[in-house]
Each structure stands twice: as C-alpha cells, then as structure tokens.
Amino acid sequence: MSTVSTTRSRKKTGAKQNVTPSFMHWRFLVVLVVITSVFGVLAARAAFIQVIEPDELIQQGDSRTLRTRNMPTYRGIITDRNGVELAVSVPVRAIYADPKVIHENNGFDELRRWDALADVLRQDVTELKEKVANPKRRFVYLQRQVSPAMAEYVDKLDIPGIYLRRESRRYYPTGEVSAQLIGITDVDDTGVEGLEHMFDEWLTGTPGSRKIRRDAKGRQVEILETKAGEKAGNLQLAIDQRIQALAYKEIKEAMIYYQSSSASAMVVDVKTGDVLAMVNAPSFNPNDRSDIAPHRMRNRVITDAFEPGSALKPLAVLTALEFGEVEPNDTIDTSPGWMRLGGSLVKDSRNYGELSLEEIIQHSSNMGTSKLGLSVPKNFLLDTYYNLGLMSDTGLNMSGESSGIFHERSRWSKFELATLSFGYGISVTTAQLARLYATIANGGVKTPLNMVKSPEQPAWQGQAERVISEENAKAIVQMMESVTQRGGTATKAAVPGYRVAGKTGTSRKAVAGGYGEEYVNIFAGIAPVSDPRLVTVVLINEPGGDLYHAGDTAAPVFSSIMGGALHILNITPDDKQVTFSRFLKGGESGS
Image 1 (spheres, one colour):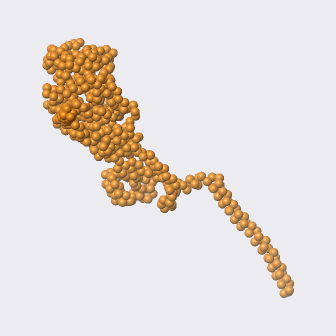
Image 2: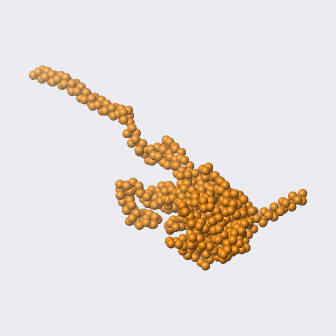
Image 3: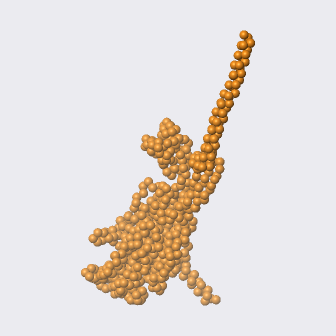
C-alpha cells in the first residue's frame, strides 16, 4: 500500500511539473506584450510630437520661458538756437493692476495696504477697488506718470497684483514763457499742441526689443535676440530763449498795466527770416495742467487775425512809388483834411495841407494814403498786397496758422480802396505783419519765416524772392524813421543809441454791424535803420485803461523788447557805426 501511495505521489508531482512551465510561459508573454505596447505607444507619441507635429509643444514651452522686453526710448529734446533746453523727457512710472492676480491671491485681505495705496494716489479706496473688481481683466491703469518717490512707496506696499512700469513724462524748463509755441504732449507722450504736435513723428523714437529665455523661477538665462530701435530726433529751434524770455516779461507786464485782454509780440531776424521770439499773454504752465483754459493755449501770433489799421499805411506809399506815380520827394495835397467817396467820409484828425510822403507816414494821414492808393490801378494795389505776403502763409507751416481775412471782390468802390490803403477791410496776423516789415527791411526781398534750425527744412521753404525794388524799400524805411522822432506818432518807440523805423496802428475792433469801442494797438518796427537786422511787432489787444493809442501802449513795449534784443545780440548801435565810419574816413585822408 505504501508502494501504491508513493507511485501516486510521483504521478501528481510529475503532473504539477508539467503544468507550471506552461502557465509561466503564458504570463511572460502577456507582460512582454504590455511592455512592448507601452514603449510602442511612447515611441509613436514621441515621433508624433517631435517629427509630425512639434510646433504646438514648442509654442507651449516658449510661452512659459520666452519673453520679449521693450527697451526704453525717450522723446527727442527741443532746444533753442543756442542749445538751451525747452522740452525734455524725464523717466517716471505708471501704477497698474492685474485683477486676476489680485483675486487669486486674496489681495483685498490687506485692508491697511489698500488704504495706504488709496491715500498716496489721492483716490477713494472704494472706487479704487471697483477698478479691479472684475477678475477676468488682466490690465488696469491705476495712475500714470507718478513720481519716483511715489512709485517706490507703492512698490514697498507689496500688494499682490499691483505693479509698476516704466514710462516718460515731458518737462518744460521755461514754463509759461514758451508754452503756446512749444505745445504739450498727452499722457501717452504724443504731441497734441504746438511744435510738439507739428514734429511729433520726428520727436518720437521706435523702442528696441530684446527676446530672452527664463527658467522656472523667472530668472533670465539666455538672450536670444536683440533688435535695435530707431532713436528719436532732437529739434533745434531758431528761437533765442534770452529774447523770448525778455519779450514775454514785457508783454505780460504790459497786459497787466494796460488792463488788456491779451498781448503778443514777435521778433524776426531780417537777413534769415528766423523767428527769434514768439510770445503770448496770458499763457499757461505746461508742467501743471490742472487749470488750463483753452484761450490760454492759443498761439495768438499765428491764429488771431486783426485789422492792422495805420500799420499798413507805409504799404500804400510804397505801392505808389513802385507804380511810378510819385517820387520820394513829391508832396500830396491833403486839404481840406477830408473828402467824400461814394457818400462815405474819409478824414484826418486835422487839415495837414501839403504833405511830403514822409510826412504822410509821420502824421499817419488817411487823406494822404487814400489819394496815393486811388492813384494806382486797383489790380496793381491788390497785387502789391499779395506779393508782400499779407494774404498767404508765412512759411512757418504751424498748426492752426491763419492766412488772414480778405474778401476779394469783382468790383471795388473808391471808398473800399481808400480804407484798404489805411489798413481796414483786411485782417492779418502778427506773423504776417512781421513778415511784411521784414521784407521791407531786407531791401524788398521776401524770405519765408523760419522756426526750425534742425532738422533742415525742405528746399522750397527757404526760397527768397524780390517783390519790390531795393531803392523804394530803403526809401520807405527812411520815411518810417520819422515816426519815432520828434513830431511822429511813436516817439516812445525810440531806442537809445539806435535809429528805429516803424509805424503805429490803432484800429477799432469790428463787431456785428460796424465797429465797437474796443481797440487793437500795434507797433511794427525795424532797427537799426543804417543796417536793418531785426523786426519786432507788438500787439496790445483791447486795452482797458485811459491809454488806448498804440503810441502810448505798444510803442514803449516795442522799445523795451527791441532794445533788449539788440543788446543781447551785440548789434552795433547806429551812433557807433557813424563814429567808426568817420574814423575810417579820417584815417584814409590822413594817410
């Protein structure tokens, strides 16, 4: 029995030994298939990602590690002819928020920090939080162009989602002195007024960029690409800031003293047409725009047109000389001091009788200029006005510049031509009047006015042309000198040491249906007469005191501005020139 049991035991053992290898072989195959499949899938996925469609993964990786940073760029500098800075850009910061980050980091829990932020920004804390209440927004400006000290304080508050970014702000060292001329920029540093607007493209640079790769902690590990930007251009003006400051001081004081609504002045270099000063009062502070009224921002020298009155009388005399109707030494009979033209009256303040051409200008005779104006053909008179640039642009090409007001007619009455000869029926700007006098002072050569030294202006802008004869231009200058001498209407315009030629203009302001009680006072003058170098025009608008004639208001202001400008530019006085000339003649005769 034991033998049988042993035999059965051996058979069972053998059976087990036969079954086990078969089971192990099947399990091994399953594992092998699974492992092979996994690696096959991984290999296929890797091949798909790296060979067939790699762009999406690369894009996702780059979005996490690549950043493009703009290099800071600043607006170009504006300087005067001597390099004095008139407009510069200073670095500031902007405070902005990422509402999504604020909400994700429970940023509103820091109540004291939000109170401190609202306090430094001078905003209501509730309104400040409302700006960032939408968690779907990613960018909200809280305040632009803040000072470095304020930015540093905000940075130390360390509120989640509140960040700083670099930007620039325009600063004007001369303040209100050149405000209307230079203009201003907006919060995005874009020119919106004056030369800032006119040369905005030139003054604006293109920022450069740098592409970098960051690691997981946000640290820069590699610079992949650097792209250079375009540097902003600088702007150099023809303005002389010394003369600009002097002129502004004088017209601001004059506006207050004569109780006028506004005042303007312009100084022009006769030889080149360069504008050395262009000022207006009232003005504004471009560095503090909290209280800027539109009327203060207007550059009245180029925008406001007015009837020049007697300031145009030399032009009527010049027209008669150019036509050949009279000679410089001729006389005109103005008796009896008045005349009727088509039912309208033209008269002088008194009967001057027989007047020379010089005396017509010296006494500002309406009768004299009317007779001269009517003595030449209408077309010749009008063409002379056009040729001297009274109804055209001055060459400045500034934004808002007016070309004046002149109503061309097919038929002109004698009275209309007469009033045109003494400065009514036509409106011009201060800049146009300055160009007219500069043309006469330059011997009859008309040169466009120029505001900019660099960048160079187009060639057509600098072309000069002769519009009247040199002989007649010099004769008119000599005649206008009598205005500032004894017996003239503007003795207060005289400048010690210099010979000054010029003309006053006191005109009533036009209103609906005629003329009102308000006046415009003008004085336009040339100096020195022996070698004309400067033209200055002063306008006092609506003087409110007892003095309302140009000889009492605009003339003394002209004297201060012209005298100061001549000294600043170190222009030799006429009396010194005469003395030096006599010295040379004496030396020659002695030799």
